[in-house]
Length: 131
Image 1: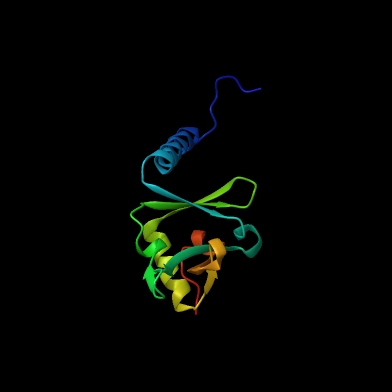
Image 2: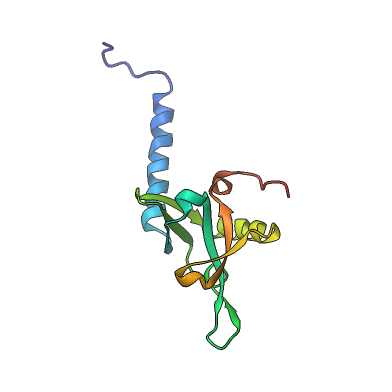
């Protein structure tokens, strides 16, 4: 057993770990967060991001991602209490990419909302996928 000997680089790992803890705290308690429950995401591997809803007079109005004032969306996916938190700026980029690729579907309560289907793996991808 080592006595009072920290492994080489521990000070840097500690600093990085503490920075990550502060960043995660900001994710949880800092910005305005819109909570979305997406029970189908676990099976479809897509996040449903609403962008249009009926206006009650036979027409359509922007909704969801197009009108949100939140700083981030937190998706509750599946029943295992897994969460995916996405900053709005990143989510809007992914929404535009999904729309460009015609990844849209009806969903939400009663399937009366139009939404973009964003593959979950896009959230962590650094580069957009080719068309």
